[in-house]
Image (cartoon, rainbow, N blue to C red):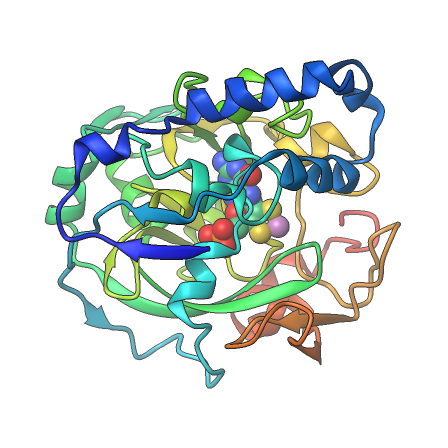
Length: 339
Ligand SMILES: Nc1nc2c(c(=O)[nH]1)N[C@H]1C(S)=C(S)[C@@H](COP(=O)(O)O)O[C@H]1N2
Ligand SMILES: [Mo]
């Protein structure tokens, strides 16, 4: 598999294989093999394996163009870890809207239409906002923040994000006194997102993907709205044009391709908690002392220049190493119960 970065978006080549066609092709194969009916009862990892096998690899994936962004290098939150190579960040993804295997998003998301893109901020606020994300990206001062991303599946990366604090956005909407949580929602568009059109492709998730934070977590200076990585706008597979990054929590909290942020009074539903509440909680703070029911969280594979299997196993740190900045929010919480 080769990944080609393109300078100019070539419409003709891009439309050769649309996500919808990929989805239709897969559905036909799945039907022919009688997989549609049984897929709901298969464990997710088995489904992922099947999909890999059902999806013939195209020789070349042409990556959607990305624009250079101007930014300041943040001095406050940098960590010493070596960066994960950009190629790994772009080709090893979780974005179930485009399929459940790690290489599905880069293959299937390149046609995602990321502009124009509207972000709504509403709910318990005095000033509901409807923002054009391109304008927002141009208007906000951007900073680069090198953060660890620790997936609940026990692999991790180190990513130079570009973005701004979520607090800046929330403040603009002026939350009222009832606002206690912040709920996030990914785009819902089954025509563009094959995983939303089929439970088989999308891993059995009820879309749109939703996430949430407590108000103090949302306002914590570490909580980032990301609009880019490695100096340029976000690739579609990483959640273009706008996503959340919460570095002390498991990766699934960092919801991609957001269209709505709603301030609410009660703890909002979250996608992985809805799917398996005994395995994935609302808080999902990285915690080496509380194992996932099916695997240990004590260590993780750090994805570097080599393949995933050659990746170095390193101990997982409490709050992913960000305890100094976030631990005080949880002093009254039993983190074993509120996993
Ligand atoms: N909408 C949406 N957001 C999502 C996901 C998803 O499937 N859909 N996967 C999550 C998971 S499990 C992880 S680990 C991170 C992965 O981000 P990356 O692919 O940019 O590394 O995105 C999170 N955000
Ligand atoms: Mo994840």
